[in-house]
Image (cartoon, rainbow, N blue to C red; front, top):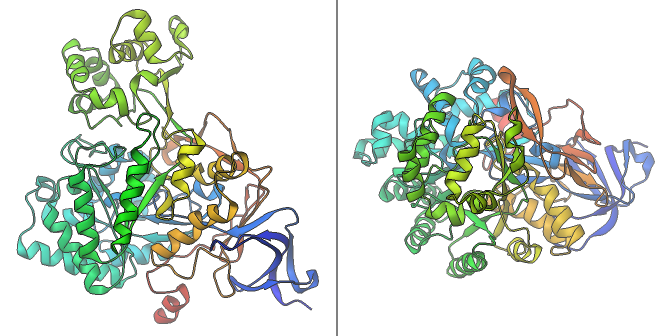
Length: 589
């Protein structure tokens, strides 16, 4: 007798809570887990044989930038290829609502440099669907469009500030008037009434490494403390919500964080009285003790009742870039200036001796802690159409500079300019590849894994593969993490911290967001370098890594991927804070 829509049989079940694994079956009905235990094959309309496979909750990624991509890719790849079933958007305060009609184009341009989302993609793939102005209208819009993953949404503070203060006022750092602050609070309340989960904000100071399209800071980069604390008080008054924040006022989020910045995060947590997701906690070979200091700080904060979680950057992934596109040295004003404009304009500036002297003078941080490691550690990977440069292939900038008696910046730029800015460089991995160092970080109970930046930096980076990398590298290959701990950090902890208490675990009554995979066969494809795919609107390209070893990926009880092949089903839901999709549907009816 058929009792379940789907039965997953004979799998090793990791329920996500940290409890020990066990062998068993899972029955799914109406998108929910209906039974866990012993279930006959005859009880399922569809039976998935999970013998020898791991069955676990789908992964929750709280740091993505799929706000635009969701409109042309309902699966939010590459994250969905790697087992992610729920994504958060609106991170770092970036997004597209609220938006007055005359500001639509400007908000799209705002994403081109800071997150490297091609303008043409947004115009073609999202702009033609633009039917919202307010934040509640944006949420209703997301509800209507097809989704292959679940979507949760922070209020993005950059467009909110622009909407209330105007572009010039928001970017001036002048602070709000009493009337403006009251309106910001009203709109934040209105958005959270519509189910938004809190707010996201980036504060990287006047020399932000993630700058606006014209090289100037983003509005929140120069937002006064008092205004941000006032918005945090809204969450305290409501008794709900979550704040995602990057707070490194010197412009470099990979640093350990100054004492001033940490004290502000503590004040923010005390004011908001809600969880804070602090970006970024990372193990770096250049600073081998920095992440231990961050973990000690997180533990001390939580011991005092301040619910501050670190967002852990763990993925072994380099940046691959050419100087036609590269802009992640924007914390240096000279680099910011030199890497703006057309290819011809960049060529002229990057060859200018006086500009180079300024770049070198401002290079102290980049020498030791650039995005992707020191400049000297960058390798020359390809030199298209310039055979005279092939002698540099596979060599680091440091080696080349030493051999030619040059500063590393000059060595890098000489090769780039000679190659008409088409030379492909490869950084070191963005975090330490020492499993012991990174293992200590991922095991910490105050660390939520992620910072995939999915949907952003697509010409440079494939952080959305972090789930597969973690399970293979730190669980299977080095034993730094148990499967139970891995799935706790990948699913249960992020869902619970963000306030989505019905997800992130496998229990009867929970939504059936499930991954079934073969741990022995799990891998990223390609494993080392990236594939280039022309699969974006306006014939734009991106770098991708696919996955092998995921047998089935299921969202709300429907299989979305089988052996890496998309089923074209779109069962994803807009997750509204404290409102289940069924409650929302009933209210609408």
